[in-house]
Length: 376
Image (cartoon, rainbow, N blue to C red; front, side):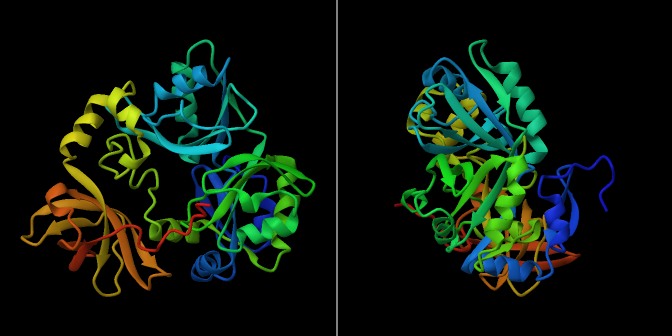
C-alpha cells in the first residue's frame, strides 16, 4: 500500500478497481501488472491495443514571442534542431549538462497554430531537475509553464488507430503519421495527441485534463480490443524495441553518441554545435565513442539483469548490462548494455556474469523486435 508521501496519478483509483498490483515508481504508486500478468499484457499490446497510464510524466510548455525565440532557447540546452521543427510535428532529444551528459531525454512538439510555443514531455523521475535546469537557463523572453493539470495516457498496438477511429470517426487520427502531434477532438474529449509511444508499436500518446482522464480511460477500456497494461510489460516492450530508459541506458555520465542516439542530432546542430558538451559530442561523431550501447542476446534461457558484468572472449571486462530480461515476443532472454567500442561489432562473442556464473552471449542488432511505426 502506498504511504502518505507517495504520489498518485488521476487514474490511481481505476487501477485499484481493475485489480492492479501497485508499486512505487519515480515517487508514484503505479500499476506494475494486472490479473492477466505481464506476459499476457505484453502480447496483448503487440497484437491488439494496450492502455498505459503515463500521467506521472512531466508535461510543460515553453512560451515566447515567436517560434525562433523558443527554438533558440531550447537549442542552447539540447542538441536537436528545433528551429526546423514543423508545426504539428514532434522530435526526440536530450537535455544535456555542461559535459554533454544526459540530464534527461524528452519529447518536444510544436503545436500547429501556436507560433511561439513548444510542448515538452519529460521523465517522471527527472522532471523536477529538468524544470529547474530549464528555468535557470531560459532567456527572459521565454517562460516555462508546467502543465500539472494535464494527464497523459498511451494507447499502443496495431489496433490503437482503429480504436480511436471508432471513438471519434471524424478525428482524422488515421491520417496522422509517426511523430505527428496536434489537438484532436476524441468524442467529447478535447486532447493533444501525438502518434508516438515507447513500445515500438504504432500508437498514440494523449494528453487531456486530469479531471477527464478517468472517463476517457473507461471509454477506451470499453472497447474489446483494449486492455490495461502495467509498468512490467511497458518495460519488456521498450526493451524489445531497443529503447533507452533513463537511469539504465541514460544518465549524466553518458552522451548521446555513446547511447547510439546520433540519429537524434540533425546535421545543422552537428556542424554548428552551440549546445552543452558540443565539443565532446562532435569529437565522438568524428572519431567514434570509447563505449557504445549494444543489444545482447544471452545463450540459453537465463536472463541477465542490469548490473551484470560483461567480458570479452579473452575474459577481460568490457562493460555492464543496463537492462535485461525475457523478451516475450522474441521468445528468449535479451539485454542492452555498454561495451568498449572494440567489442561492439555485431556478432562479437561476450560472456555475462549472472549469479556467479559465466553466461555466453553475443552482440545483437537493435531492435530485438521490429518497429511498427506508421510512417505514412
